[in-house]
Length: 443
Image (tube, rainbow, N blue to C red):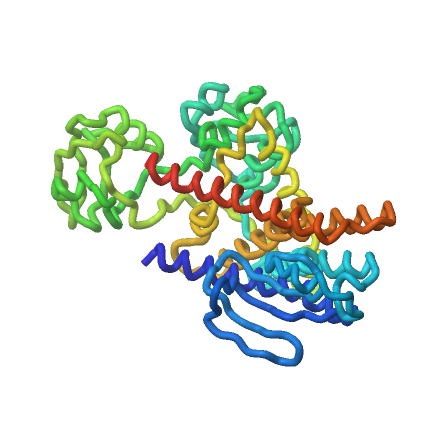
């Protein structure tokens, strides 16, 4: 059921983003009296699920959910309708319009996606405000892995600053390190302030899922709410609702201590100390190769972190939402430095449809859905403005060339460029989805 919910959210968000993007091209074309022959959500290769005509435009729903398109008369696009280009130019065609008008038509989709993201952020702040955990309120410190410990971090460290700059939202600390080439973290450990240098390969490790840190949480009360697919604890006789009070008579203060103990005793028998209906029980369990006993906490321990919530009225939500939109755009642009960096090898983390679908929550949550949709709208806008033929950015690149030189590329050149661009896009599509498949195989 979880997978179905994620797929539905993905398709719903994709439909919104594609319609808005193509509406941008459509509206700009109409402003400059350019004929739009088709407006499709998803691609209609060979056939459409349904279609209807209103005026000069055919509207429809394709069956291939890889995007959508508007077919504008008098331009070479993904439809590869070169026959039309052999006929004399007509005043309602794209190729007959002035260069600056064609430029606005081609950037209309990107502009609308940016505007949609900002509109969604305004709506989110108005409806839910902003709730976050201040870095200063992470009272139990952090928990990290062996890679984090190798650079000097320790479980229980309290983050004070990054490059001596305090970061208000704890969830922004790792993002700041990744995007802004930070060189040090200042932490408090047992009452002392320490300065920990970040090695050059730390960002690379973070992108691989190593060296990250999270909020440290207490161990108990640990009520078993569910079991993993392969659960040694369930096979040994543990039940939902049991309270796990310790292992081998050891009481844990923090959840990471429990995890470390089980990992250290994988493939070895351990004694689960259980409290069931007021009665103490001991159950022998052999942890698996992954160092897990297959239990899922039924509820989060009552750690009483002090979260901060900022509420926005209608007029305050508008500038705040726009500001957040620009900030998210800036952060995403910084990621391109990482994608094309040999040092970080971020291209290995490039994901396709499985990766995109996985970022949606497992249960339907409107706030999370709209946050993800806004971010995807920014991604769609940035990706489309890249100077690759077959993308909006490719058309923009050729238009800028025309504006600067006064010479228009030939239709034959544009036709070949479109083919090359489509080959590049399909290659990237194969790479991204291939990475997804390889990650599934490694699991």
